Image 1 (cartoon, rainbow, N blue to C red):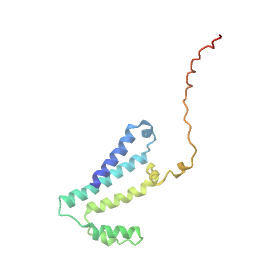
Image 2 (cartoon, one colour; image 1 turned 90 degrees about the horizontal axis):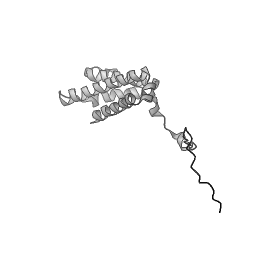
Image 3 (cartoon, rainbow, N blue to C red; image 1 turned 120 degrees about the horizontal axis):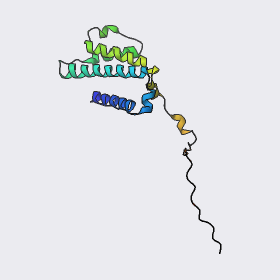
Length: 143
C-alpha cells in the first residue's frame, strides 16, 4: 500500500511539473535527473516488495538491512550485514543514497523549509493591473 501511495505522489508531482507552464519552465536538468533517480528507487523498492516478498520466497529485512541502516544513521556502519542481502535490496539502498545526495541541489530542498515567516508577514494587497471603469454618475438635479 505504501508503494502505491509513493507512486501516486510521484505521478502528482510530475503531472504538476508537466501541466503547469510556469513550473515546467523553472524545472532544471537536476530536477529531472532527481525525478528519474526517484522513479528508480521506487521501482527497485516495489520489485523487492512485490517480486521478492509477495511472489518469491520472501526476505526478512529486519535482521540485516534494518540493522545496517540504523548503524549508518548512528555512524556505526556494519557492511557485513549487507553481504548476503539480495541484489534488489542492495541496489535499492545504493540508489536511495544517490537520491539523498542529489536532494539538496534540486527544488525538493523546499520540503524542509517551513513557511513560519508567513505568520508575521504583512497582508498582501492584491490590485488589478487595469483600472476599473469609473461608475457613471447621474447629473445633479436642480429644483
